[in-house]
Length: 71
Image 1 (tube, rainbow, N blue to C red):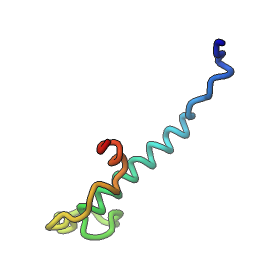
Image 2: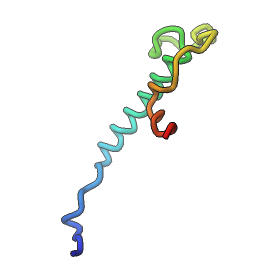
Image 3: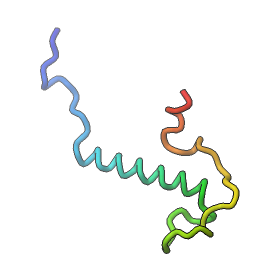
């Protein structure tokens, strides 16, 4: 049995791919912010050295893609 193009599932649209990419970038930014920054990872001013934790706390288990790297 052959599969015709009308029977194959359509892939994600360009708009869906952009939304997924934006979500991925946001999730990564927030994960890194939680680990490296003293307070809010979405500051209203430019980042400065005093915003960075002197001792890094957190773990990469909450960051996107961390499961893929542990398998």
